[in-house]
Length: 74
Image (cartoon, rainbow, N blue to C red; front, side):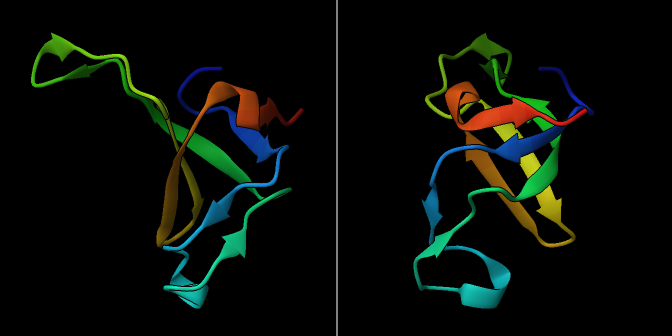
């Protein structure tokens, strides 16, 4: 995957920061979005992020996910 790719969440992932369900558990399985960034460094130093893929789903909703939670959308 690379920045700009369309992706879909293929596993059940519970988030608590969804704008319409703030503070409540919300499953984002089958949601589609766009890869905004792949976190490989911070302040110029390399990092090994646990959730390296930043995905934008809606105007105000973004999440960091692992590569095994995502699949490319054709």
